[in-house]
Image 1: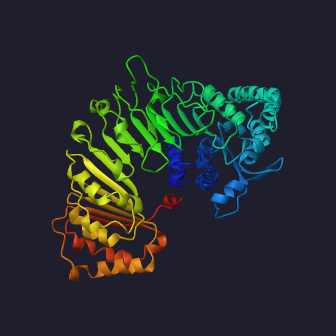
Image 2: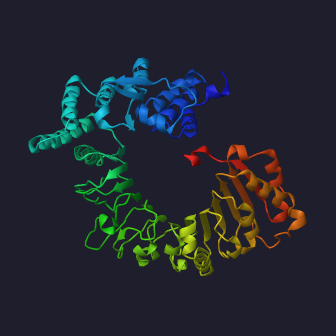
Image 3: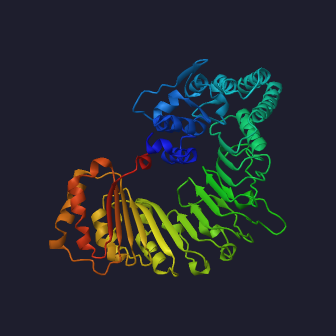
Length: 510
C-alpha cells in the first residue's frame, strides 16, 4: 500500500476539503472531487461522508448558459418535462442515501422542479409515504396559483406555510440555510420566508438573496453568520436583525435603501455584543448612496473588521468606533465619498484599505487626482494603507502623490509602464500588484520595450522602498520572453526582493 493509502481518514477528509472547497455547493466542483476518492479503497471509504452528504439539483438549461464543462455531464435526469443535472439517482444506485444531509437547488424555479424535489425526498429517505403525499398536495396548491380569486389566494398562502412546515420537519438538522428568492412571486416568497423563520432558530449561518419580505426579527441562539442581499418589494418589509448574537453580518443592497433601524435596539441603543465582522454593500455604484439615517450611540466591543462598499463612512458616528478594537477598515467607492478622518483615534487599527473601483470619466470629472492626493497627504498613524483601483488610461499617473500608501493593487489596466515610473510618487510603497485582464500586442510591445531598455534609458529608483512586485496575467500572456524581461525590474528597483509573474486565477474572470 502506498503512503497515501496509509493516511488517517480525518487527514484524507481534510485533503478532499482543501482540494475541492466548494464541493458541497456546486455540482461541477463535486464531480471534479470524485477523482480524489479513486486513490484507493481507504480514500473511497473516508471520502463518502464528505462527497455524498449533498444532493444536487441544477436546471440544465440555465446551468449550460453559464458554464461549458470540459467533458459531458453524466448526471442528466428528466422529471415531468423538467431537465436537470442531479446526482440523486447516482446516490440511490450506490445505496448511500442516508448519508445525505443537504439538498442544493441552483437555477431551478420551484414551480418546475417540484416533482424533482419530491423525488429527492423519496430517494434520500427523508420522508415516509404519508409525508410525501402531504408535501405533494401542498406543493401543488402552492405553485398552481395563476388567475386566483381572493379565496384561492388565501388558500395558497396557507398552503405555502403548511408546505414550509412539512419541509422543515423533514430536515431537522439544518445548520446552514441558503435561500435564493430573487424573482419569486408573493406566494413563493411566503414559502421561502416561512422556511427561513422555522430554520433560523437552529441555524448557525443564514444566507438570503431576494426581495424584502420579512415579518419577524431575524434571530437565533446559534446564529453566527448573517448574509443578506435584498432588493425592494412593493409590499415588502425590511429585515429586523438581532444585533446582539451574530459574529458576522453582511448586508448587500440591490437598489434598496439601507437604514440603521434594521438592527434591533434596546433602551440603550444598539449593542453589537459579539459582532467581529460587519460588511455593508450597495450594488448601486453612483454618487448618491442609498443610506437612511446615521448610527450613533452604538457599541462594537468585539469588532475587528469593517467594510463599507458604496456606503458613506459618515453614516456611522465615529464615536461608535473609537472605543472598539477594530483592526481593519475597508472602504469601497468613488474617492469623492472617502472620509477625511483622524484614523489615529482608532488605536487598534493596523490596516486601512481604499478601493476606488473603476477610475474612468466620472471620477476624473470629480478631480480624482487632486482629491486622492489630498486624502493621502492628510493621513496620520502607523497603519498599513492599501489601495486598489480598476484603472483606465485617463489616470494621469505623473500627477499622483500618495504618501502613506504601503500596498497598491492595480486591476485591468494597460498603463503598467506609467505606474512603474510613478513609484517614487508613492514613497512608502512596499508592495505593487497588477492584475491584467487584457493586453493587446501594442501594449505588450510597450512593456517589453520599457523593460528591455530600462538600464539605458532610465535611472535606478534607489530611493524606492518597493520590496515586492506581483503581476497576474492570463495564461496566454505569461510567455517566456515577458517573464525574462521582468527580471530587469530588479535593477530598476534595487531594493526589490520578490518578483513574480503568475497566471491569473480563472475564478477572477467569472
